Structures are given as C-alpha cells and as structure tokens.
Length: 114
Length: 115
Image (tube, rainbow over all chains, first blue to last red; front, side, top):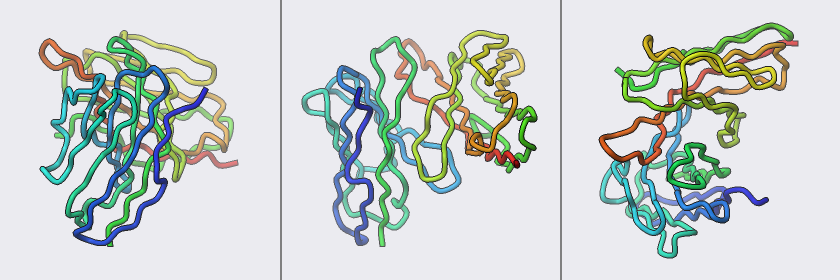
C-alpha cells in the first residue's frame, strides 16, 4: 500500500517568508509525528498528533512553528518568519495505533531558507 | 550528556565481515529501541526493534539489548556494499503515565562496506 507522502519534496524560500509543509500519513494511521533533521544529525522530534489533537508539541523550537491536523489525517507544518537556521529536512512519520511503536517515515521535505 | 549517543564513524568494514554498531542511552525509563537505516538523501527506514534484554535476530541483522548497561547494538553479518548507509539508533521513552511514542535519535553511525 501507499506509504507516508510529503509535499513539496524541496522548498526554497527567503528569510522572513511563511511556508507550509504537508504530510499525508498511511491510511488508517492515527498517530502522526513531525521531526526535523539537520545535516549530520539524527531526526529531532517536533510534535505528535493522536487523531486531530496535538498530544505533545514539546519539540517545537519556538512560536514561529505550528502544526495542524484538522481531520485526523493530513497534517500541515507551518513556519512563520522563516530564518536561515530553519533550513533542514522535515520528516513526517505515522504509526498504526497508540500501542504500536513502529513509526514509518515519509521521504521528507528539504527546506532551504536563503 | 546526550540522551542517545552513537559514534558518528565512519565505520569501515570489508565485504563479508561483521559490522558492529553501538548505541548508549541515558534514560533508564526507556521502553523500546529501534534501528533505522538511512541512505544518503533518503528518509529513515526501520530495520529492527527490540524491547527485551538479549538478542533478536532477523536475517543478517541481530539487535542486542542490555538494559542494565543502557546499551543497544546492531550486528550486520556478511556485510554487503549495499549496507553502506547511516544507521540511526532511536529510543522510545515513556514519560509518566503517557507514552507519546516520540523517538529520541542518536546522531547516527556511517557504515562503509568496502568490496
């Protein structure tokens, strides 16, 4: 079946602009995660959704970052007033249920802030 | 101290040899442990998970967990050039009564398998 999909695959923007990154999880997966991966580092947790609600947003670096999942499926990560330090690969992952640990990652969106 | 630590490498082994990748973690409350493989420019791909002390084997891969030593490792037998990638260790830490399932990753170890 289809895996996790993310769009766009690449996004180049200018400092100060607003960007939206989209994640479409595996069908039926109720849990959705956003991670950020900088070059040479492992992914870093940003936010977790169980259904429509953000159950854990402790990884969001500041209030410029926000994410939604209004219908419990597709999620959008929104970054306001982008900074050069936001440049990274943003990864989305989903898993089947509360009790299942295995997360499946999408291909990521490479964000470059000039 | 980082929550999950890995040697960044690169770890270089000849084709056919055993590659041993190591990971330590700081939180004794850690519940489950994962190894992901990441090819350059690609997203992480799950290889194995382990929950209990001891060894877990899947084909050429063996995960080893020692909770007392807070240590988890991945052995790759009969290494192939196609195994050349970055291997990420990830830990799921249960916090209080909830388990969000968020993963804490190490920085990854780069493995090079030379023909």
